[in-house]
Length: 485
Image (cartoon, rainbow, N blue to C red):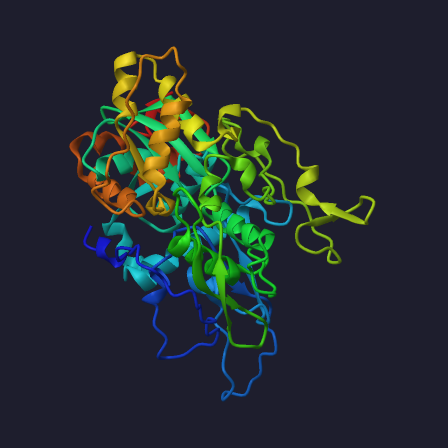
């Protein structure tokens, strides 16, 4: 509770887009404070490959073994590191070349680094702490179980409790009933809350978010031929995506007419300092409108995970895929096809056991559909006047009025609803879930939901008599519980 201020509030001011390369060598004067400023737990880490050119000469610099957070995204492609992202599109980034066990190990490494280097909580003191785990609505039950095992078994917290981001956001703003619209980096979710309890039938997850807007910004400028003649690729060069994100945050607005701005675009090439290019960006209101018209966004190029892995099964020890990878294959491609290779995700078996999570409709239609599925007309009216936006993209200028206008038009004419309103957030939308998680962690009604380390290790993932973990697709206010067999 005393470490909440370790995450400084974000600012919506104009940001300088120049991003320096990360120093990959160990230094006694290196500081880890910057590393935690923009870290989202479980988002990315990077690890050095092999023992590249390591010498016994003590005067030569030594590579850092692991680099986490935004620093991992600012490493030059010329350095001997491989980037790993344990979470992609709101799920564990399971793929043919990234097995589940590696994802779990990377999640543990990231959290252990955060606790040790940022929050200054060493391993031998963690048994005196309890953890509030705030998870996105996109997570399936097995993913949540694996996270619990990391927190209780590997990180050694004494107890833990789980809450959804939407519910935490409502409490973070001092509300009890709201329609929470969570616009993340790679996915967007809509969930209705009534009197502090989530309504599972209202949940809708969309496979686009803030990063898609950034990629659309690049595509739009190239379409209008305003982008400098430089090699910018937000998919293969993470530092380019960071630059695009900052340009989006500074210049993309939703308003009528032409939206233009003069900006400095930077190029990042191997072995060279960042280059500066002054240019006039145009059509800056188009990328954020992709939230309402997903066809504007660049098509998704990330492979979805194999859905069979997320089946809600009582057998928590079920084996997952771990295919060997041929050494002559590049990341993201398998042998075969007319050109000799084809994207691996085209060969993925997809089992959509919950089709509602795969909706690709626009944001306004998703909000209207979610609230109308709540049932009672009095609750629907209350929810339409209690919409809450969270996530960094919620700070986009003009987004609130655009949502209000388009949601109103998305409501069918036969529905007796004529007023919609987005509530002004009392806390920064990018960090309100953390505040709500702290509030939920100390409320009396959550005491029965706490899971103890000893109970979880002995009974949590085993089939048998006595107390065991109960699967539940519908995550309520007390998300996880123990029940008698």
